[in-house]
Image 1: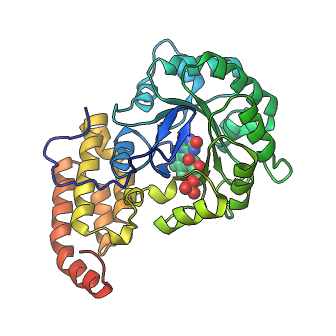
Image 2: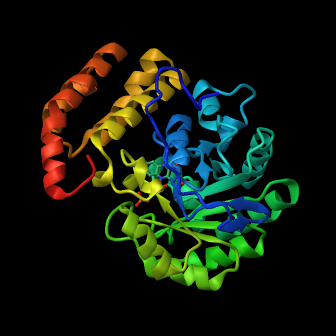
Length: 351
Ligand SMILES: Cc1cc2nc3c(=O)[nH]c(=O)nc-3n(C[C@H](O)[C@H](O)[C@H](O)COP(=O)(O)O)c2cc1C
């Protein structure tokens, strides 16, 4: 059980999760309207727990390759991606692949782990994946999407859902067709990253398209793209009418967004306590060495923009041991405290 690692007792989650369901994925209740996006390399079990405790309404695993799932013995990487904590509710396992038959088989296999929902990734833009018809490559073959959902919803106990982009490119902007196909073939929810595959992360997410999808289907719609602040969550909900908002990049180094607070509203002591807790979870999950190395990218984002971060960054990100990392953090906290106190007081922010 990863919920309370020893020695890290200063972390105080403050969740705003409502007591009544905000919406349902078929019969599965979802409490809240903001959730952590699936992000390969980021939304692993340790970080999902951090976000969940702060109020993220649902958990999605990182996307997991159907072919890897169908191996007789799972690699360590596949097994790690598929692990989740009983506290994460609802828990969604996300899979990807291009072959309908194998995707259905993979969905059945991961259902044995008892997730609440199984999601199909139709958004990944990475060349190797998309060009062989997986991830966003599925959007070029709507008939495969129809076949997958028609079949998978017959064989699964749990709801099947899909995460899409708006299309392959400007010439195949087929999100409404795909959304209808999902609904007509039994999908229980659509999450939409409001860009095409060709856009990758360029330009702005097209929130009008999310609104159109919401008006077209009756199943719940999760909007996604360019939400960076607490105010953006409300803006996207209001603009699109979506049932919930999924936050990716804006939640890296900023899990407080799920508790209704932006980065600058979080006191340094709380930030450092959460960094330590996240590191402790990482060490427990990945082991001492791997846990520290995999934590570096998170640490860089936690400290970005902080007073003195430029000086802290290199030593912190090259620390060779947990002790060294922790000492640097402690020293930074002492040095920064006085400055931050003055600065925050002057700005009227929490200290
Ligand atoms: C590093 C990274 C990894 C991602 N991995 C996944 C993934 O495994 N599955 C998925 O559906 N989307 C993945 N995405 C896309 C995000 O879920 C999300 O759709 C996208 O980042 C847009 O939302 P944002 O503007 O809030 O970041 C990933 C994004 C990033 C930045």
